[in-house]
Image 1 (cartoon, protein in one colour):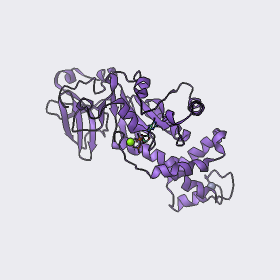
Image 2: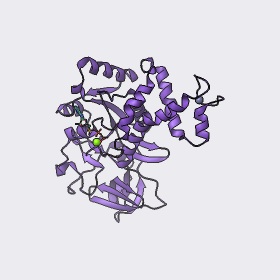
Image 3: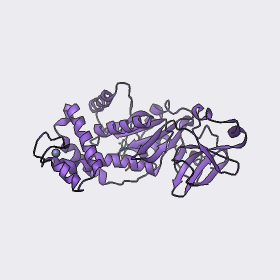
Image 4: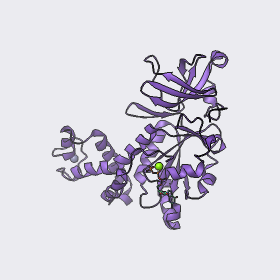
Amino acid sequence: MDASISLFELGWQTYFQQQLSLDDLEAHKIARVCRVEPSNYTLLSEQGLISLAVQPSQPNMTIGDWVIVNSDNQFVRKLDRSALFNQEQKLIASNIDTVLIVSALDDNFNIELIKRYLELVHEAESDAIVVLTKADLCDETEVDEKRDRVQRLNPLLMIETVNTKSAEPVEALKSFFKKGKTIAILGAPGAGKSRLVRSLIDLDDANTHFSVAQDSLFRLPNGSVLLDSPELRELQASEAMSSASGLEVVAKLAEKCRFNDCTHSNEPGCAVRKALDDGEVEEQRVKAFKRANFSYDEDSSSKSKPHDKFHRSAHSDARARKHSITE
Ligand SMILES: Nc1nc2c(ncn2[C@@H]2O[C@H](COP(=O)(O)OP(=O)(O)OP(=O)(O)O)[C@@H](O)[C@H]2O)c(=O)[nH]1
Ligand SMILES: [Mg+2]
Ligand SMILES: [Zn+2]
């Protein structure tokens, strides 16, 4: 449905409005990036889709960015961002107000991954809400116990426990879906992201889509916007990756270190360092492993069996990297 999109429906807010000049108001158009290709950006505006060729003189842009173009649809400038997700200098998505961190309450419950997603959201300067799915598959004590573990990460954290196969998510989440808010979803494969989305919006309803020619921005209840993109899915998958099989590789190496309490920094006989120097393991994995080990030390309840966790979640990794939330 290409007709009648308002800027507010696209996630426009005071923060961006304040950056406009008189020229912008009188002669320019405001648009939001909804697709990034190597040589082209696609933007959504009140006037419909705009195609913008990538030029060396432009700043790097990403999905979610607000852009000013002139009446000939030429780039004028990019507005300052309220939030930005990036990974190793690569821009992932911008201007996301709230991220739903989705994690299942069943055997795939993974507190380390929730923690990691919370870090990402914090670094991006967005807000997080943890949505614990599959509450219907667990008994009440188990739900309470896992919810408490998440709450202990941060006493102020918003947490909702839901069964995505019911109408619960809409009830639980609609107060967070305020007009003009941009929402994204992060979660491991199988966590229930697609089910959650389908419990919130009707993807067969043309009204849910701003335009048939893009599949990154959708209308959510109460005038919020859902942002989903291949880059964001890749980010969440790579984090899920480093939480499981990726760490297992390093854990196996660490068993061969000379010292039991090796920190894999510069101890003699460190098998992890050697593998790094020999290029047999990626630095990213080692970093993720150190991060995870550090948190095991903090949380004695899971310290005893980090390997169980690697094995348990390793199989879920193998499942699809790039499944869209909505499929
Ligand atoms: N009983 C129950 N099943 C659920 C719930 N949420 C998701 N499921 C089921 O769990 C499975 C995975 O859910 P999806 O929504 O496809 O998970 P996803 O996060 O989109 O997974 P990927 O697309 O692989 O990343 C599906 O079979 C769902 O029906 C829930 O709250 N309760
Ligand atoms: Mg999915
Ligand atoms: Zn070592």
